[in-house]
Length: 357
Image 1 (tube, rainbow, N blue to C red):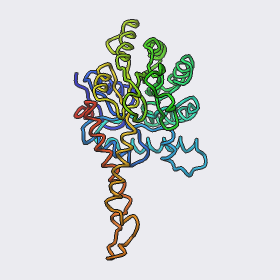
Image 2: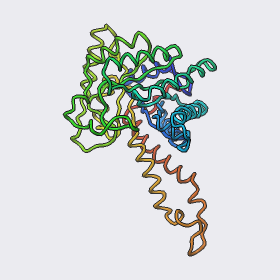
Image 3: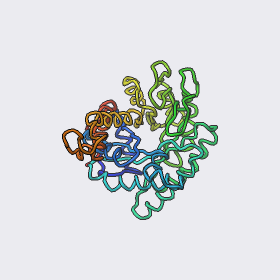
Image 4: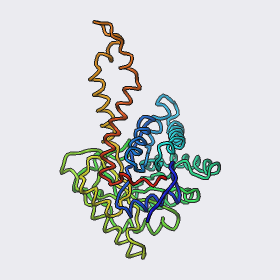
């Protein structure tokens, strides 16, 4: 079946169409963590270049950084920065000719007020425009008991569903640390917490699907960051077992769970492909794109070393204004990020698959 959507930020039924097309087409959409306009614009540039839709996401600390680290009220900065970032993307996404999903990343128990504040702003935005500010929010209560995890997710989804928003939850623990959420102490191939139980996925489906749309970050040994080979063991077959259990128990169509792959940076390409075949529609990438941006900036500085020590060459008087112009420095970072995302779109099979018409 052929699907088409208007370019720009998608939510509600349009978001569900995007997911359905990805699962039916056997590809996934990169979900890229961003921290400011440079990384946001680089993501949209890469998506447009590859004719792929994309998910742009922010952590709470990225929202704070977007607003400005000097603001004294850290909570307000996290909220206002996240709103500012969303408005920037709403304004520009259509011009890039692709569909963009706007998402916030890991929010643990202590960050529930941040998520609730953003939902409130989405409610106001929905009243004015017919669309929420964000497409979805992630509530990561994997460190809590499953009863609280699911009941709190259900409570928030009851607010989100009426305005066309989705919630992403996590069952099990994605190892490593992501912007202050999680710990490197989780890492280890023998840690059972890194592997979600299919029965828990069934519980989530039975509770949340009658309320509204949800996606699930099920842990199958994946971790945030990049670690030495052998430290973790990816077991995508857990995803297959979870899909089979829900399908059999609830009488659904094949692959009823909309699955998310966290910790995509540094993962084996064969395991990525296998995970997609089991219904993963979204893969997070952060560590690799951070490094790509930083590496390109470092190479630019190395290539123009004198310009970062002298405004004018002390020997021959050559002016270096063009070299130390921040726009050139930051553009190098953007180009490095775009290059790494070219690889991500290829790995996930989404090149040329944009639904934007």
